[in-house]
Amino acid sequence: MEVGVIDSGIMENHKYLTQAIKKQHSQSYVHSDSSTADSVKGGGHGTKVAGAILYPNGLANLTTPYQLPCFIRNIRVLDSNNSLIHNYPAELMIKISNNNSDCKIFNLSICSNAPHKTGHMSSWAAIIDKLSYEKDLLFLISAGNISTFDIKHFLNQGATYPQYLEEKYCRLANPSQSIFSLSVGSININNYEDVNWTSIGGIGEVSPFSRIGTGIWGGIKPDVVEHGGGFIISKNGNNQIREHESTSPELIRSTLHGGSALGRDSVGTSFTTPKVSYIAAMLKQLYPDEDNNLIRAFIAQGARLPNEHFRNPSKTSIRYFGYGLPSLERVTKNSEHRITFYNTGKLKAEEGHLYSLSIPEEIRGQGDEYDILIEITLAFSTKVRRTRQKTKSYLATWLDWSTSKIGESFEEFKEYALKEIEESKTDYDKDARKVFDTFKWMINDRSDHGSVQGISRTNSSLQKDWTIMKSYELPNELNIAVRGHKGWDKNKSEVPYALTVSIEILGSDIPIYESIKIENEVEIEV
Image (cartoon, rainbow, N blue to C red):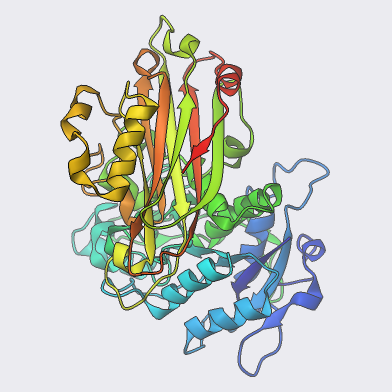
């Protein structure tokens, strides 16, 4: 498979890239310049992006022989100054998708230099959403960068890191607010300090240049983050800011204007996005017959917030990191301590699908207090209407998920869930459910219900949540409802979705995989 790199072109004869590029597929959309070479000075831009897809962890620790994860399709749209001079980027996206109908994943490490507007979805982002649904495409988009000039301005005005990221100017750049794309932010890769300089922020903390969420209408954005490097700052009080090789990722460089074939001289969300594109490409090859909702769901399912944010997330955690740092291994390699289930389906408004997952007694009955992590992710796509100004009216139909309470049987939960879907509020006794305890979800379906206050997962088309509970608190079954709700579409078109569920034991060698696998034969009920 090929990942389309919509960028400044690529140095196609580069020794680390040439085997991954089918030159007959390369294209240029730069007016009056048919070249697909990467002419950007300083080692190129598209070349570095392509290299980060093929070698997401650099070349230092490659296994021998190394197998390239995918092919790269060179789609040049930026000029030699690394600028998008096309006046109508939405039209450009349509043209690119029409000319590359066999390409299902696109890396878009380009965005505007300004934050997205918060009223209507931009035409650029709305077209990306439209194409994502109609053609089952996955766009991975950089969250955008704040320049060293702007960071210095904030610091000189008395702001501190990372508090200056709360400024309106620092929110996500257009079109990374797109609802069905995956937008990618950045975290620091390393610490650095000498007599005169020190890194801004520590390992795993938000990069000082990374634009943050939330997304438009309170949606969870960026979706995930990766290691994009950081800046160092002078200790002399003048707030001099620059890059340093110790805080920069290793990237492939174009040698068109001289310099080395590898380097640590660039940072940015441009280079975090391709690392997630690598994961998307690997997942697409593992699940070639599934639509891209499953790819999105798996990427979020394997993500984890850094440092203390995982167990104690806040609204700030989600705004900085989205769902966290993704892991291909967590969603493709079940271990003795972790098991993941998934299913895909289609729903109409006022319909629901019910799932039940049994939890074996030997896990629930452990004498010791083991920490059990439960993660659930739902991803869906549908038709959109740009003129609307809220997530649930922008979407033709919207989905969400809910779970049974602790100790509530499948039949009890089924009655509640179906009546909720039908909105027949008077046909069942809501008070009957109050005898059961609820799962303590970190985000939850209302902004005032979860541990994270001020954010609701239902404002997004990618809805992940997680809870950590003691093994003896586990119910004997976990019941889940995926529900369809009316948007603007009166025809009630079917909405494709993917649901993933993981159970993991934290900080213990107790095996759980086999017992959960044997206990379950996950079935669906409409």
